Amino acid sequence: MNGMITVKVNGHPVAAVAGMTLSEIVRGEKPCGGHGRCGKCRVVARGKLSPPSEDEKRLLSEDDLARGVRLACLARALGDCEVEHQSELAETQIVSGGAAMELARRPTFSRYGVAIDIGTTTLAARLYDTKGALLAEAARINPQVECGADVVSRIEVALAGGAERLASLICCALDEMIAELASGAEIEASEIERVVITGNTVMLSLLTQESVEPFSHAPFDARRLFGEEMTAHALSLSHLAPHTPVYLPRCISAFVGADTTCAILATRLCEGEAAMLADIGTNGEMALWHGGTLTVCSTAAGPAFEGVGISCGMRGAVGAIDRVMVVNGTLHTHTIGERAPVGICGSGLCDAVACLLDLEWLDESGYLEDEPVLLSGAVSLTQKDIRMLQLAKSAICAGLSTLASHKGLAVGDLPVLHIAGGFGHYLNMRSAARIGLLPAALAGVARAVGNAALDGAAMLLLDKDSRERAESLAENAETLELSTNATFAELYIEGMGF
Ligand code: FES
Image 1 (tube, helix red, strand yellow):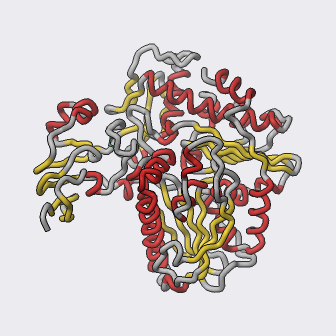
Image 2 (cartoon, protein in one colour):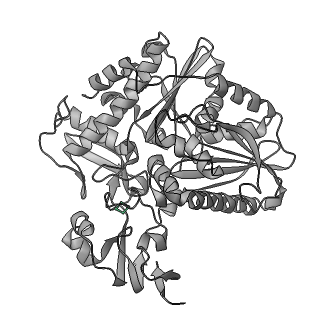
Image 3 (cartoon, protein in one colour):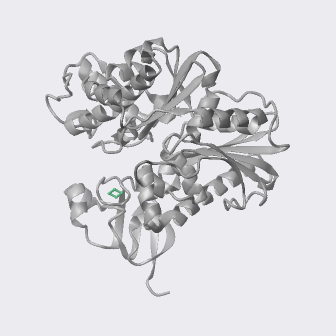
């Protein structure tokens, strides 16, 4: 066919059309949605390519360009060429779960069932038998990252006509994971009788091709909050028998999704006197149980904790600095996989800033004496990075305090704070308190609970009674709006310093 070319991706030939961008060919991540702003979609490419654009010249050093480094979202293949692309799939550390599942009480299936969590960045799935035994696990990067790292960029892509593509990306990935689980446990995928798929409200909307238009403007009212059953056929999960029921748990609001409902269930948040839950990512979702009522809120922390917008930032993958400490007055770092440092992830960033405060290289206002500060190898922190972190940590801390004070509580009154999600798993609580990401009184009672959303989805699969409980909790939860809350605004400004 005219215009067809061959591109070798990591040595394997891939058919492409001349003029395609390298990211369309390698299907890599586009943290800034492919707008040529973040400089993070680096690949090494040789052959017939478009010449480096102005944005590439701005974001890449002369050395990089000489070595053939290109930005995949901008460089186009004009003829046969070769691309080396590091697969994030194999390199990312995915926190799949915390607590072991309890034995099934009243399973919703008679042979096998699957629980899935669609995270904005990662997908995780588990296959269970009727006794609640975990037979297989699967995890991978959410392929929608090629359309942008956060929900906002994906909403933009969907509204610009990409909704079908986003749905097909996620449905194909889930279908492949189901096949992987089945083959891992040596069963037929058609023997899987029920699936529970959780995720935030936008992820479930993109999966079901529900319009995401309401998420793009105030008052941000979700049209559909789920808590409903669909079929495998309707979601194009072709490895399952067509009528296999797929349950999508109920979301609480546009910004507090079914993943939070599931995390509430898994942490048994609403079974004691009082407790708090926080899932810290680009969006911080928080829930408070007190006096028999559940109150939730969410705050846009920005993507700093996922390493986006930070000069040397990356997410928690191999080569990311995840821990920083001071030994004899100097900085020491640890990387995931104990490899040479290539960047810094959220937990490393929090540690690094706590260390800079301890060393008094950074003052209480966030002013950095000498910038950039070299951490290890070529990984450094700039004044701008510190400012980004200040915005993010203050949003989370103010959110937690506002939620407590809304119910007439001081944060110190709470006996436990569950921190869900991958970032929380690696976070050092001392650093979190030192930099003011968590109120000091809460840092002492904080405990990381891993992928509580997936644990909750598994509970919904393995215990018939939990569905009603989860739906009623989500339906009756009170939502505290932070964007118009005076206490939040005040605490947010106050909490910006260290
Ligand atoms: S520069 Fe290519 S995705 Fe951001």
